[in-house]
Length: 327
Image 1 (tube, rainbow, N blue to C red):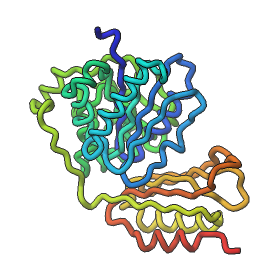
Image 2 (image 1 turned 60 degrees about the horizontal axis):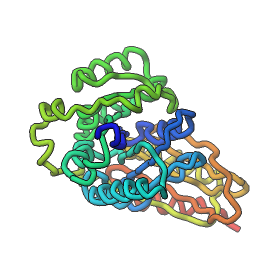
Image 3 (image 1 turned 90 degrees about the vertical axis):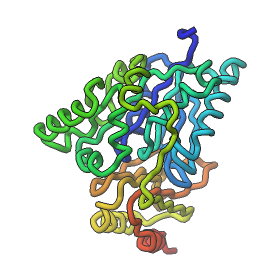
């Protein structure tokens, strides 16, 4: 019975820890696995689906308008059921599922799904919870956000990211803190999205008894709330953006409000460029790169998502509006 169940990996980690980068790495590897990806993003619009490599025939499903651990959990059960049914019919081919949660997700209610819903129990097996931890920002995130603590506490594997941005002493101190929080989870590193597949797939690491020792109410407690002051802002624009203006504006915003910006990422349609520009950042760290070329039949739309505390919406709206190319 167990061998017939579909293994599921929950990929979690706080905002900006590198989940989508790692997921892209997994999808590009010649590992022979056919993977169905279920994504969840916080806010009314998603970006990650556009950032993922989709040339391997994977099934990629995006869930927006809420956190996977609360408002859209029913959708997760429905999607898992539909995937299992299509797999039996032969209309969809996959042999494992990776769920990428929003960075604000408590993994407990997501993991709960695989033990309390009868249809899910009959078709799926929770293989492991893999948690990414941003070495640069984790100390503050663990101090301030309950979700970041829960993500570490429930992990079967912990992958440290961005270790090249801190010194060895800081990495060691973080390792000690994470071990104290979760001594059963193996800790490894992921550099620029590269990690050993043995630390990601077929771990058979999720131990229900161990989790019940941490949280005795795991199978019955479904309560979960986010900090009310964390909100999202989405910018959309089909007119091309001026590269110099948008760079100056985003640099100024990050310098002024970086401490409040937990995560920001998006696709920009820059005048004169045939490729989309991928822009993303965490707090004061931001980066941009050229993405896939625009195709002839798609709408060239800039779309940016900001997640943070006390969002400067008026300044964001004004700055973006002033960065549109003037003809």
